[in-house]
Length: 470
Image (cartoon, rainbow, N blue to C red; front, side):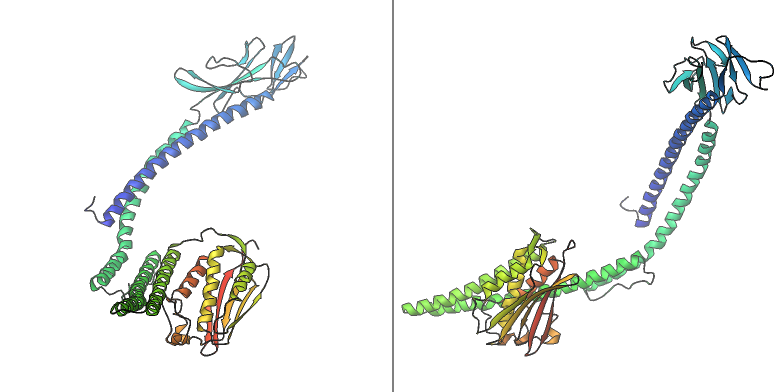
């Protein structure tokens, strides 16, 4: 089995499946047909007994003028029972007999000597190794009480139809199975041909160790086209991921190298000779600041790594975004950074589903970013409103701005534009703040966009859809 080609395996499994399916279909059709025919036999028995019941009447007296041609008249209780000419002793394999209150046969034939059990429904019995259905029905009507109509039918009354059906299936189903197996073999070869080409392309990419190459797509736009397109997307993401990881490694090394180098240099300088108490304190403060910077880098990395692994929002619940933003603004009003003022325009009673702690972090990161790159004595405006089916939370500053070609990159990990050197409050920045903002927005089914002009400022807007039930 291991040495078989995919085409042979597909054909083998397809053959097993077709044969199994054919067998199951045959058995199901046989069982269903048999069941349907049995029910049909029972229904015929019921219909014939009911029809014959309607053809039996009680007659007080008769004379030659009143007798109807073809009707039968039986003496019963000093009167007569009239059996209409529409009454049938045998119809569709059903035999009928009439019994009196003493269960004496007075008309018809009990072909299997079945017992008379009035109004017990259809019973099944065996006579000479054959199965029969028996139905006894008490008659009702004027002076007919006590009379019983017995109906008998052979279980195999309709078996001729079943036999023909089985014979037809025994010919048709195997023929269909053979044609299906041959067709499956031919189609497997045809459908696997593009896969062989695709495999060759993938091997070429792998052997060349060049993720920039792509699989050549066919023009059929079928499932294989989609598969090839998915492979190309995967290669693109792999290429992008490798580049990002390389850049991430470089960036984190750079970010950690600076504080580590500073701590080592400061320690060596301080230990090189005896120092005064003030000098030791000054040196320890430098070490503390750099240690806090490293701590911040590690915490931001862990936080971002945790967000990247999340598939859905943890502890999601409904909360008032307007109230959360007002609380954040109260905290920010006590903050004094380069005499920058902060204002807000918040539409009340905006409710969303999500994690309030995550949204709190998102807003704080955007505001911190605005302080960081805002100008001295500048202004930050935080606004919240809703329109149509979306909610908009914006943080606007009048700072240094971001170049157009850089705006698509600012949400990448550790990315900082060249003009970030003008920011003064960057002591603990590691370039993960906006990446965390973007990841939180995605988890809340939203996104973050930026509008910016150099020396005029930037507007970061968090867009989230309204709650469906709102």
